[in-house]
Image (cartoon, rainbow, N blue to C red; front, side, top):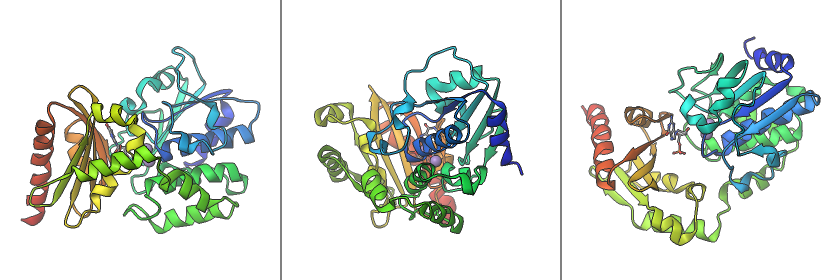
Amino acid sequence: MQERKLMELAEAAGTIAIVGHVRPDGDCVGSCLAVCNYITEQYPEKTVDVYLETPPVKFSYLKQFERICSDPETGKLYDLCICLDSGDRERLGKNVVYLDAAKTSICIDHHITNQGYAAANFVKADASATCELLYDFLDEEKISRDVAECIYTGILHDTNVFKNSNTTERTMQVAGAMMAKGINFSRIIDESFYKKTYVQNQIMGRAVLESVLFLDGKCIFSVVRKQDMDFYGVEASDLDGIVDQLRITDGVEVAIFLHETENHVYKVSMRSNNFVNVSKVASYFGGGGHVRAAGCTMSGSVHDVINNLSAQIDKQIKEHEA
Ligand code: 5GP
Ligand code: MN
Ligand code: MN
């Protein structure tokens, strides 16, 4: 079985770096800490370091969360680098140094746009989450409650609580196997997914209030500018969920949410409901993702960004209607 490879590589390595994508989400933090916890439980003698950009504190209930290092030490060499939930090298951000310096590497991922950038690559675009895929790499009987909490968290977040169209029978089987490990799943769902701070609710309310329909109501967009983020004192991770709220607007096929990262530079998040392949749109502008959830970074005025995205989306809508 190909899936044995992760443990074979881990067994052979004395030092291991685990890396995930920039602006880490639940699947990224969950998969990195699942692997970290599993390896440190099975092989306590090995050096295991996890490198991620500062993760959202809402995931701090995960075991070894405090072990995540957000200041890359350039030049540190590892026997093995494990890349999780990142569709391409660029998505690793500064932590790509650990991939480049490692003696060998493995990537486990579920992005349709992943071309295979590590020495060994396991990409299954039909998996709801990297955490779902990860289950195949671990021995069921060796999965502890701590590891199960990580895996459940990843699946929960990438499926938006088991309701996105990427949720399959397999997804529920893996989540069920994690529940059998005795995790407090309802607490995890409330604490990490539904709970919002006051300002997170405020900025979501404002983004929804200011949203605009276009392409005959088939698309919707909203934007949060840097000055708004400063005003509310929020960071990018406080904007989670806004694009999903826009997506459920009646009649909408594509939702777009922009937030300004630098002057006239926007992080674009896209979601679609039925037929538009937003991964194709994101890839056209240098990003990537999944068929129903994708993103990229674009520069210019909001007007230009929306016009450029709109042209690509409209093309797909017209093809669909033809
Ligand atoms: P989100 O909109 O939640 O930030 O991202 C949705 C999906 O698109 C995620 O699976 C994420 O990995 C992917 N994605 C978002 N932004 C980018 C990007 O700039 N480049 C690539 N390759 N993928 C992205
Ligand atoms: Mn992710
Ligand atoms: Mn993922």
